[in-house]
Length: 340
Image 1: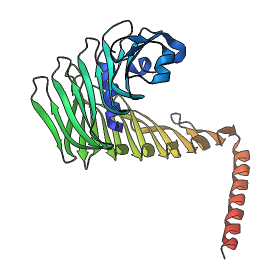
Image 2: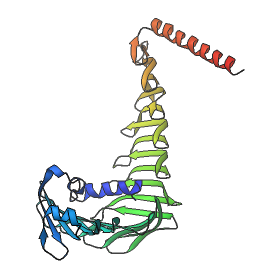
Image 3: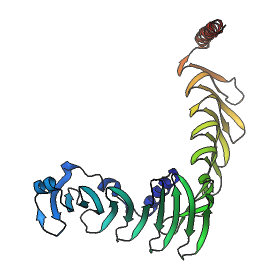
Image 4: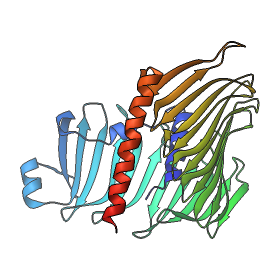
């Protein structure tokens, strides 16, 4: 039920909330890590594991894991039914709660170490669900309704509980903050999907501006330092680097390289002070292939030759490249004759 953009939001919350989340580790129950296990009948009396498994009584299984986490699982009719909880290690405070209805997960709630809710995910059907986030003080941060991966409706609030942005019928602006109210990023939505994300530095200046199509990076990705100077400008297509990428030092162009489907392809140029070319490198399929030229003051350029990443003399390079061209020509001729 989680969308690509919501995953990124959760990661940011974890990083900026002081590390109060550890459910990824604590919820991965390993039989070898079980210290003790009790089987409690619905009416409160304890029974043996053998009787529990044989008769399928309704009730709870309480498991203590080696890392100090206590897992309480509710059953009825042989299916998970009611709450299943995981505590923080060596604590009675619940970290995560799963609510089941005859084996179907209908709600998940994450809590911080104080026992206050941080996130709630409520399932309404196989495709529709609502996600709510809270600030550290307990006021709602956002309430979002999804249909599959599409964001249908969203309301976003300040710590003072004032609405600061809205997504309606899949269109609008989602302002994302951490549990302390610090601005993380702003997402622009069209037809339920992100079209642009702006990530912010702690001083409020843009850090990353990225174009998206269907929640996948597609278009331009710009990175800036906290002073507003450019760090990189990249062209992306369907989630991979594809096109020209420019990188900067102290706000001036330092390196320019072309990519094809995530791999370096074509000429790379390295600059001095953003203008003068100091080096040119030929790439093919992410390895050096062709001349690598270094320009040193007014002296004659220094040229190194590479074929498929291996350095060699110009003569051997031209010989090997000539053979490649002949083979390619023969293959094309064969294909042409075959298609007649």
